[in-house]
Each structure stands twice: as C-alpha cells, then as structure tokens.
Figure (cartoon, one colour):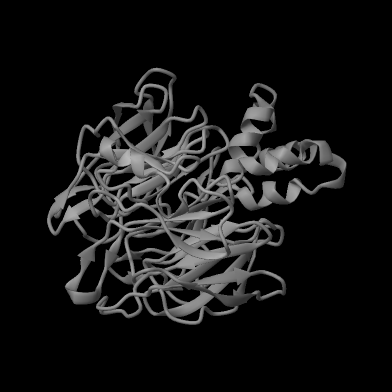
Length: 440
C-alpha cells in the first residue's frame, strides 16, 4: 500500500492538488483511485516492499468509465435470485475465456454498469424497445451471481453517464428519455438505502452521448455530447457533491470544438477530451481541462484519423490507448510523461461502438462493436491488446455468444470482465438480455 500512496501522491502533485492531499483520507482516496485504475493497483500487489499489503490487489476492478455502458435489464426479478448458480455464476475458478451467466429478465442497450466499492455492479436505465427507455435499475452481486432490483430512477434514460463518487454514491447525468428528448437532469443513487434522489440540473443544458469523469478533487466534470442527436456541444459543467444533499453545479467553460460521442480520461490528474464529432465531421484533436485553468489549447491531428465511437483506456503504465473509429481499425498511444502521441498496432478488424476494459499488466480487452460504417453488421469477437513493445500487439480473445453493440463491459474485483446486454445487429437489430463473463 505504501507504493500505492506514493503513486496517488504523484498524481495529486501532477494535478497541482498536493494541498488537498493534506486534508483528505489518503487511504480512502488511494482505494478509490485503485478501483478506477485496476491494472496499476494489481501490479502493486507484487511490490517486494509491500508484500504484506498484497491483498489490496483484490480491490482493483473498476473498469468503468471507458466507455462505461452496462445492462441489468429489469434485473430485479426477485424470483430469479434462486438461479444464482446458473452457468457457474458463484462457482469455483472458471477456465480462461468466455462463459455464459444468467440472462436478464428484460433486454436492453445504451445502459450503464458501475462497479461499487462493495463489489456489486449497478446497472441503470437503457433502451428496452425501438423508441422506449426504462427507469429501472438492478444490482448484480458477483459473489452469489444474484440480481436484485433497486429503486427506479426518477426519469427513464439511455445514453447517460454514471460516475462513482468518492463516497460510493453514483451520479447519473443526462441522457435521452426518448428519441429527440434529451435531458438536463441528474440523479444520485445511494447504495446504503438503494434509493435515488435529485442531483439538480446541468446549468449548461441537456445532452446525451456525452462524457463524464471524476476529478481528484471529488468533483465530476461533464463534457460535450449532443442535443437531440445534433452536432457536438461545446459546453461543459462541473458538479460538486454534498453529503446527503443534491450537490451543486457550475459552468466549466467552453471547448474549442464541439464533441459528441467523445471520451474523457483522467491522465496524471488531468482530464483529457479525445475525438468526438460535430457538424464538420469526426475530430482528430484533443484538449485538456485543468481545475485552476479551464480548457487548454487544442492538440490537432494527433489521433491519426477523426475518431467517434472510439474507446480510450488507461493502461497500467499510465499510457492511454485510443482504439477504433467509424473509419477503421487503427489505434494510438498517449504517453503523459512525454506529452506525446504515437501509433499503436492496429486491431484485427474495424470497430466502433465497442468496449475496452483495462486488465492487469498493460492489457486491454476489446469486445464487439460495429464492423462497418453503415452500421449494418457487428462483431461477436473480442481481442486483447498487450503493451509489451513500443506499439504493442493484438491477440484474439475468443468470441461471445452473439454480436453486440451498446453493451457494457465491467471489470470485477476478481479481474474478470462482465459483459451485459446490448444489441445484436443481425436480423435488423435485436435487443439482448444475455450476460457473459470473460476470465483472463
């Protein structure tokens, strides 16, 4: 744990937040940071000087936010709890590769799945029919394989964001209630009561397909997105949580370019916005946000191609892997120690709308996604990125039970990856209730 604290302090220093470190619970902050950066904490378990603290490696597993979307369906059917052992949900060690778990009672896509501090996965909202969203939420417990229902959202929504706060509550922001009806509202889930409460309204307006990231300060930065499927938004907002209350919002400034379906990652304590699209087309640029300086000058032409529907995943080494786009299979790496971008090896096939989940040891699991720009076909395959050379390499990671997009892939505390729901494009598009587990 001592080395984890040193890493955490280094992040705080890089972010200019050393003064804040003196008034926060460093152990608690470190544990929270570990859940968001599982690979780095996994490696620490083997740190020779910290051998007595090796058990902390089990806290890793919040893969979340890369693209975080995940489905529990109306996953609260109490009568289904007895099927917890189905397909080995709560059984012994599984063989490497894919296994099927208990299906969801209701199919859905465009939902979110968030790993809680206690190890459960909170699945929220999503699309349940061609023009219908749901307000339901469910909790999956990996230790038992059981799904339980939790209180419903105030408002049905899909293509929203869900961010785990420092106190283990979950902030759900924006999204779409129905086609052409985006939202500016926000809600908070409290795992201690399994209930929802209002978290106010985004002051810079309604949005869906935006991005959100938890900053070292404990605040949540909400960035870009679209309004009623229009061009990319320039607006951003900053949320400050308050214990037992709705919290507060402020305008966080304006992006240099509009960004819809972008990614935002926390790299060395700094929020990095990557790609997205606007009325001009897909962006091949990035820009950064500093708490004391707002949005910083744009970096153009660093992504190789304009990227939308891509993923951005933080590796064990601290580098950021950006993979896929609507126009190809290429990938690039960002090295924060040098502030440089470089080409990475390309995926075996084009993908966009896929998921990318960090694993221990500078590895990333990529699943599903569209296979062509007309969006008429999708992949059932997965592949694994391994950074064991400057450009890294890709290797096949088997196939899921069906092709899928709009699904979620969440890394559990066991190191396994839980893939939930989505949509199978075959036959014109079928919403899925299937749940699968990838064991590295």
